[in-house]
Length: 294
Image (cartoon, rainbow, N blue to C red; front, side, top):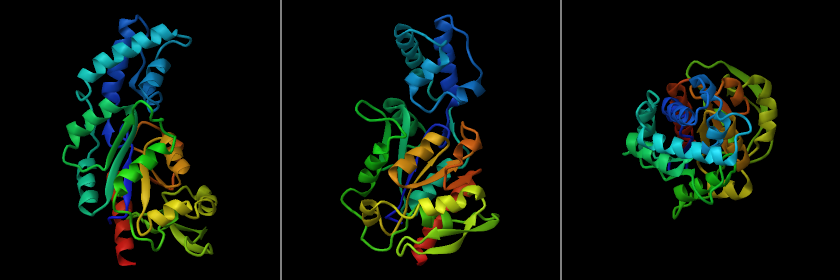
């Protein structure tokens, strides 16, 4: 599906990096004589860039000088230990190959510093043809700013904008993607072409108490996007509320993964929440099959 793009978060979505991140912060804290934290506590701190991670780990009220010194110590340690414990989640590498082989474009958007993001991609996904790899770089805002999504879309579709035609918005992705063993409910949603409401089946992985309001809210991509990216879908996959807000701010679909660093409750605003890589595969590749047979 040449007109589709899946944008992945990195930490907690593609790769389990919490071991190396927590070890690096622990090193920085120890060097400064500060108390450390558990791995579980670090799960709640990551996701907003390394400066925020280090600041949160330090005692409240730490001076700018202490923050800068601790950040330097963190980077010194982390850059030389970035892949000691970090590994892709089981099944992720195969999934990326399957998506790519199906013609779906791929990108990464992360709040991790750019050099670290690129290092991990080279280390674990060297043969995956990502259209764009975006980390925290000078002049680039952090998620949930939608600019990172725009840049990923521009790179993915540069020089070959999809033909105008039927719009497959995140509504279509949410409603037409089923999980193999999912139970189904009913809700009223707006159809992208006509705006008319119709009762459609939705996967049980969408939180049922939010399904009706989500159907009303997500009628279609914004006009400029629906014209440019018609005939496919664009969706962001991530493990945190920040990822879901990024997708919302950009007007694209949001898939939450529960195997990452955040509790499942943080993903309630996603269009779909999946618990396994196999479920994610089912959602993304079934949608491609649906679009190809319409």
